[in-house]
Image 1: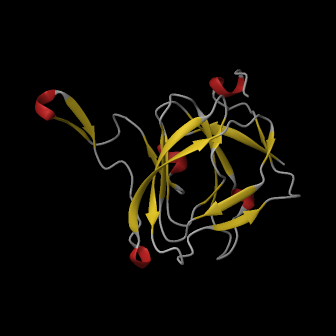
Image 2: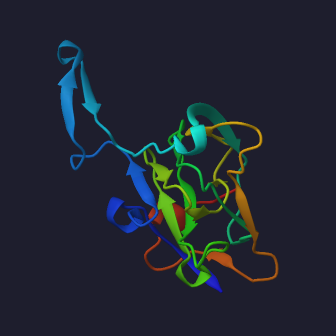
Length: 182
């Protein structure tokens, strides 16, 4: 099955979390004596479950090539996980709602093309593929849940043998369908 790449928008991504971006749709106001604009409260950081705490990390993603087979989905049941790219490179976001308490609903799997300046915040329990950088190695600032080593906050679901592929389709943004990827 080919999973088509669609543009990332706040409305389309809402069932899975929030899009983090500078937008006129976001509440924003001038601060610092007029020398900065604050885009306020862009995502719901949800990390307090079971005594969790917020933590900030940097993830470095290696580039992938299209077309590519999807191999794994994961979710974090105890907290949200936000990714903000530190480069101006596009990347892909693959998500699925839960089918039940232990597996994703693969019939409702979606792939979004995140453009420069767009981050995502996965709501707690959202199934997602690990980072999908395309053109080059890409760093992401990550805000997620820290806690005790014994906390179980990562479930994985293997997609081996399911023949799920990312493919360029008619609604794929031009920057993804015409570029040469690594």
